[in-house]
Image (cartoon, rainbow, N blue to C red):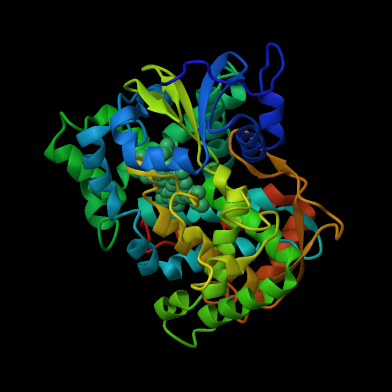
Length: 494
Ligand code: HEM
C-alpha cells in the first residue's frame, strides 16, 4: 500500500536546502538518499520539490518517464524569455520526437567527426592567446573555446564577441528557471546581455537566409535544418519558436562541455600517470601520423578519463520534471502536478556500483570491469526521451579539445597544493579559484603559422605582449581583429 508521507531532507527555515545544495548538489542528494531512501522532499527557497533518487529513479525515468513525467512546466519560463511557446527541452510526446529528428544531424557525433579540423583550429587559436607563466582561470578559457567551436561549426557564426554576454544571459535565465526571483532581470548588465544575444541571433539568421544562404558555404548545418522545418510547416514550428532553437548551439556546450573539460583538466593534473597516457593519444591525433578519425577511435585512455570525469563531477547531476499523472514510486504515491527532481548522479558515488567512488580510476571502464554498464547507474547525459542529443558530439569535442590543449602546451596548477573548489549554481563547475598556468609551449604547429605572415612564434609572442600590455580581454579583442573572424568551414564573406 503506497504511503503519501514522504520524508524531508535537512534544510533551514526560509531558505530550505539551498546552502547544502550550494556546497555540492550531487553529495547532498546522495547523502539524503542514504539517509532517507529513494524518495524525499526538499525545499529550495520558495519552491518545494519531491526528489526521486538512486538507481531505481534512473530506471523509472528511462522506462516510465514518458508516461508519468513531463518537462514543460520547468522550461516554460525559459521559453518565454525567448518568446517561444515550445522548445526541444520543454516539448514532450510526438512534437518532441519531431524536434529531435530535425536536430539529430547537426548535433551528431558524425557531424563532430567531420569537423575535427575545425574543432582543433578553434581550440588552437584560443590556446595561442594563453599567457606564458601567468595564472589563468580555467573555466572561462575553456568556455571561449567550446562555445566558439559549436557556434561556428554548427550554426555558422563565431560567438566570440558575445561570449561574456552569452554566459551572463544564460546563467541569469537558468538561475531564474530553477528558483524564480533569484536574479535581477532588469539590471543594465542583464539587459545589455539580452540585447547582444538578440544581435547574435539576427546575425545567425541573416547568414542563413536570402543570398547569404547560397553564399555561406558547403553543406547545410543545423540552422538550415531548422529553417527548412519552419518553411515546410510554419504552424508546427513558427518563427516565434525559432530563436530558442537557433541559440541552442551557442549554449549547449557553454556549461556542459566547458565544465566537464575543466574538471577533466583538474583530474589529469592531479593524476600524472593518466595525463601521460592521454597526452600520448593527443600527440597521435595531432601529429597527423594516422587519419584523424582513426586516431580519435584509438583515444581509449582519453575516452575513459572523460567518462570518469563525468562520473565524479557530473555537470548535470539532476533533472527537473513535473508529474503529469499520479504514480507510485518506491512505496510512495506521487500526485499529478508534483514538482520533481530526478537525482540521476546519485548512483555515481554508491560503492556497490563504483567501488572506492572517491578515487579517479579510469580502469572502471575497461571491458573487464565495465562498471558503467550496470543498468541505470551511469547517467551523465540523462535518461529517457530527453537524453542528451549532443552526447556523441560532446564526447568528440571533449576528446579533441583536451588533446589540442595537451598537445600545444604544458600546464600546471597555479598552486601545487590547490584542492578543487566548485560552484554549483546554475550548474556545477570548477570555481574561479581553479587556475592553470602555461609552463611552456610544445605544439609543433601553432594556429597562426599558416595564416599570418609573422608565423607561430610571432603570434605567440605578440599575443603574450598584448596580454601583458592590455590585459586579457583587451588583448583578445586586439588579436581577434588581426585574425579571420570565422575559422569554421564557411568563410563568411562579409
Ligand atoms: C558534457 C557535455 C554534456 C552533458 C553532460 C549534457 C547533458 C545533457 C542532459 C543531462 C540533457 C537532458 C536534459 C533533460 O532531460 O532535461 C541534455 C539535453 C540536451 N543536450 Fe546535452 N549535454 C552535454 C553536451 C551537449 C552538447 C555539446 C550538445 C550539442 C552539440 C548538447 C545538446 C543537447 C540537446 C539538444 C538536448 C535536448 C534533448 C531533448 O530535450 O530531447 N548537449 N544534455
